[in-house]
Every structure is written in structure tokens, then in C-alpha cells.
Image (cartoon, rainbow, N blue to C red):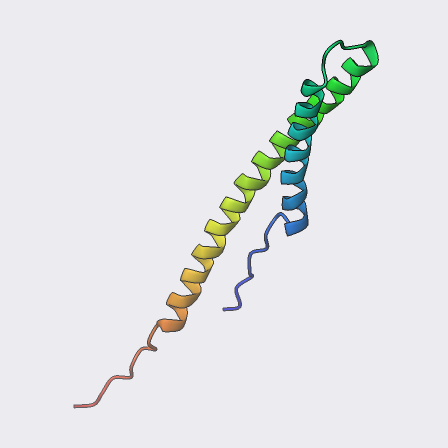
Length: 97
């Protein structure tokens, strides 16, 4: 009757890092667009690097959000099963009449 407890796939640090990567990439891209009067070749390279960072951040954030939602559903289901099993009344013995 010892049930294995489900473990979350993503730690809080990984979740924060995913959101930070997306926000930092978008922020850096906006700063670059604000300062983009005449782009030189090396500045175009920086833009490509920042766009890759934004793409990775978006994909990572999507994965983390989906995994956390699935983990919450699984953990809630396990808690509900655990409560139902603890609230069950043991079968009574037959009374002699």
C-alpha cells in the first residue's frame, strides 16, 4: 500500500531561469531596436544572437509551463486518491443476529 509519490520534473530554479531567459532576450532585443540607427555587420551578429536567445527562451518557457501544469494535475490526482483511501471505512464484521 506504499504508493510512490510523484516528483516534479522542473525545479523552481529551472522555472525561474526559463522565464528570465525569455524576458532578458526580449529586453535586450528592444534595447537593440531602440539604438538601431545604422546597423554595422557586427551589430547584425548581435541581433542574430539575441533572436536565438529569444527563441530558446520562448521554447523553454513553453516546455516549463506545460510540464508544471501536468505535474500539478498529477499531484492533485494523487492527493485525491490518498484522501479517498484514508477516508475509507474498514469493512465491518458480520454481526450475529
